[in-house]
Length: 181
Image (tube, rainbow, N blue to C red; front, side):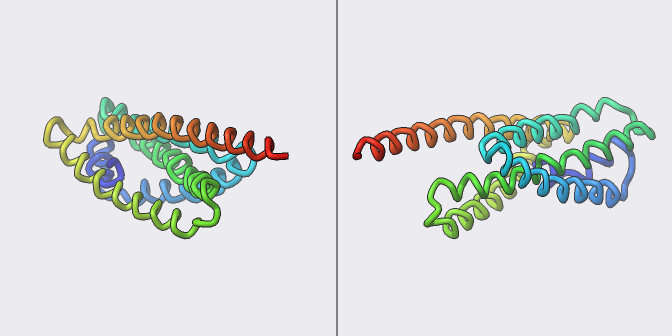
C-alpha cells in the first residue's frame, strides 16, 4: 500500500518532486535486506527471521505517517532517506525467509508453493493499492503508512499462529514416527 503511493507521500513530507534518490536508497536497502534475510534465515531460522522482518517492516511503514508531522526541510529529507534505506532491509529481508519457510512445509511441492506465493504477493500489491486508495479517500495520504503498518502487524499475528500450528503438527508427526520403533 505504501509503495503504491510513495511518490505523493515523499513529496508531502519533503516537498521534493523527483523521488528517484529515495527509490535508489530503497533499492540499496532491498539489496542489503536480501543478503541479511538470507543470512538470518540460515543462522536463526526462517520463522524468527520472518517475525523480525514483519515487525521491523511495520515500524518503518508507520514512520512514513509519523514523518508527516514535519514541515518540509533538510531534516525531513534526511529522515525520509534514512527510512527509505531502512525500509528495504525488512521489506526485502523477509523474502529468503518466506521462501525457506514455505518450502519447509512441503519440500516435494516447492515449485507449486513458490508460484502460489508469488501470485499471493502480486494479489497483495493490487489489494494494497485499493486499500490505500480507500484510506486516502476516507482520510488523507498521511495515514497510508499507518494503515500499511497495521496490515503488516495483522500479517505478523497470522504468521505467529500459522507457525505454531505447523510446529505442533511437526511435533505430533515426530512423536508418531518415533513411536513406531
